[in-house]
Amino acid sequence: MKRMPSTYLSLTVLSLGLGFGLSASSIEAATPSFKANRLASFTAEQISTAVSELGVEIPDEQFKYAVNLYRLNYKTTDGYGKTVVASGVIAIPNKGANIPSPLLSFQHGTIFQDKEAPSNDLVAGAPPAILASLGYVTVAADYVGYGTSKGKAHPYLLKTPSAKAVTDFLRSANKWLKRNNISLNKQLFLTGYSEGGYVTMAAHQALQAQAISDLNLTASVPAAGPYHIGRTLKSLTSLSSKRLQTVETQRLSPILVDWLTKQIMDRLIPDNSDVVFQDTIIRDFLRKGSNGVNEHNVYDWQAKDSVVLFHGREDATVPYFNATDAITAMTAKASPNVTLVECTATPANHENCIPEYGKVLIQTLGNYAQDL
Image 1 (cartoon, rainbow, N blue to C red):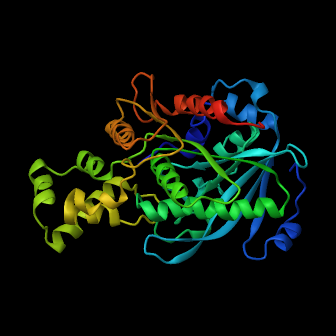
Image 2: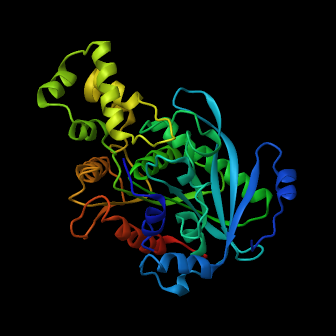
Image 3: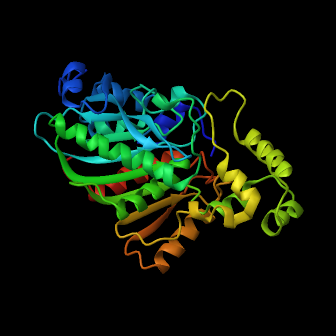
């Protein structure tokens, strides 16, 4: 889904050189199979100032820690099933030796400029830095198509590679943190907004099926995500009702599929984008209708751990039914703790709800998190 410029989103999405002294050489020696580089450091004061300059109301005392940022390269799988080297950022709060932290994975929304990827967006007000200053060791995968893997096609809204970009990064980050004696308390949280909400739900489901050793998935906060892919595509495409009916009931010619795919992708992707987007999800929808994309749905499954959905009723970018479909289906499958928090902004649209998402996120995580 399209999003606001990085600086605005990075700070409002949370509405919300110091530290461990790890040199690049010591990191390389400790991690022969993957590479990590120190990117930047921010003091708690710098982070607090960056947030307050946007008028976001988070008490200064909540920003307790200076933060170090590292880029970690790791292997994952792209949308074509091929192994690629991808990247992400690890933000570490400066708590001192042997003081544990919960681990939080932040999934970014759709971005069209590689400079806005988490490991490139090195500002004090970026979500990983903010969350780390609150006390979480925070990781954020760039996703395939950004950062180290720029030029590769981004597997947009494809369930398996979206999840693997996160879970593979979490596994690599967990190993890296252990090798560098950075303590975790075993709690793991997931969150993201828009496409990041979709990726959060996909990653939660994948981690439930195959957990990471020494990490306990505690809760996720997916927000404003297109969890019900087929229904979302039907509601958002600019096709006429006649053509939509054709998509659902008849096979379109390959030439027409190609033409429609290009038309839709041109509307979704701005001209100045330097990111390549894989068009599989659109192409499969045009070929087979909703049945062609059902495998990428993430709304209809049983979650064993807490899921707190957040969405606005007036969201025209990612319709609100994604949240209601998810809570209805997941509750029907006996998920024990799935809730929906409705955005109260006026109007409760995609952009206006971002600051409130940040507040809900911090409050929700605070109900579970230890060792902040």
